[in-house]
Image 1 (tube, rainbow, N blue to C red):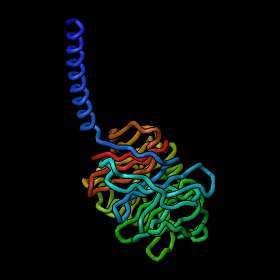
Image 2: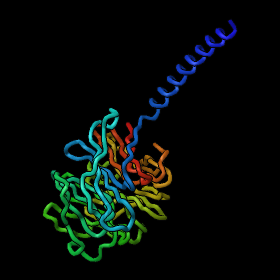
Image 3: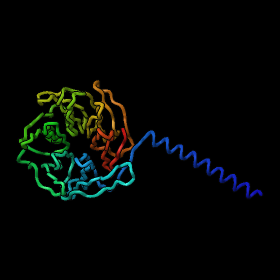
Image 4: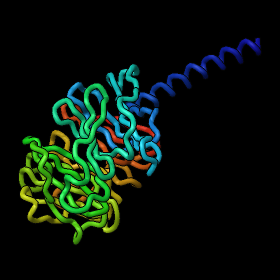
Length: 292
């Protein structure tokens, strides 16, 4: 009888603990709806394709030419059925990327690479197509008129590429940044004028700047970042990634608030506005989807 009582009590305790665990897990998921994908070596940037898939720039090993790649995540990331596959290979250290039509344009150190829907690569712009030196092409964004903006972190400038592939020096950041990284076009004028460009600094002083639409001037919103990416959600909230702190929001007065942490090194990211998803490349080998 004593053994039977212990068995009954044990089963009861197991049921109680199972219910408690289920409730606790449900609460955690409700507070932090995110899912992570592995299968990358050094993911640096992510963008959404016209097909709705998620394209990830995977550096591979830093400074090892030819081992970089583009991976793609297909399917609903929260369905449990999405998968990671290799889309293109043979890049050097791919970073920021944008879609021009169906082609993916990728910043690859000193050149821009075109990747076709079939995964075939070719040079979109070589270093000789840029005015002056090209040292370290990094992040990219494209505006509604088809103009591409790309940062050169080591030269400390932002280039502008028009739809005819003419390249100009959009803004020189030598006096205000030590390593401009993320760029985002403020199409709606949430932080600056409509069409202004927001950029964040990789190194101290870690400035977050708004550059006027014509590139003639800039002003600082905040500083102190080890910054990587910048983007806006559908409500106009500005998000930035800090390599050490995670994802933060920044208001027009420069006030910052931590939105999401738990990354090893939160690099570039994108916001899929129509699905309210924030997608972060963690340099430690993961891509993390977070519901806004």
